[in-house]
Image 1 (cartoon, helix red, strand yellow):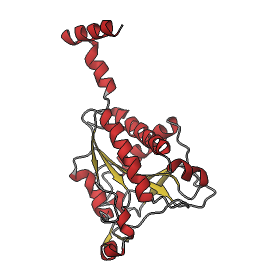
Image 2: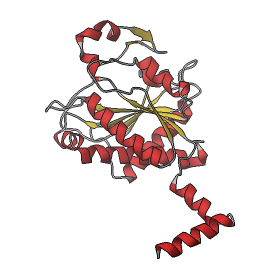
Image 3: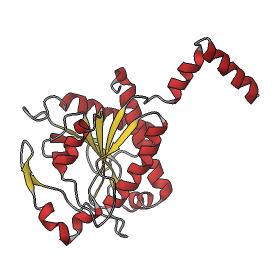
Image 4: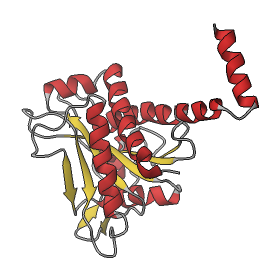
Length: 253
């Protein structure tokens, strides 16, 4: 049977038939460049980098610091490490679909800091990316769980060019992640938040969102976040959202 299928595919290739279309379906993100931002860095809490963390910059609405340490589960899993592990899994999934993936940081160590949120936001444009997804986990009251997505408000001179596409990206992420089995937030009124204060979004020149994958203070979310299988599931959910966005009106290259 495998031989018959192989011969059929070879014949289709020879005459320019269905095989190329099948190949395109197997790699639907071919040509897309996707920037991933694994939020925070382990070294952000290292006193050695306190001066770097104290840097500030105006983000279009308020002045904010370079970066923060992020949150953690009650058992001590740092948000930076969770974000990093999910990003690594997600990178592989997107590359398997043909995408080129760029990461805002290439290490997860207490010997490194940042990069600052304004550099994270600007990274998508510098990398020639079609979109930027910043991966995070929340530290909300323990009774709530589930994911939500943050998109930038329209700020003249800052996000006017990306606010609309970013909202489209956020809606696609929510729909795709839901379809893939992700649990929407139970502690906010909606899985979509539109905010003016997020430097990673305000400094972006490509469509950008922040995805809070779950609540690290919630027992159920923390348990899922702490396992390899759970981290893989979060990556699959993010990949579903990104694929949904790229499929709509050929938004990605």
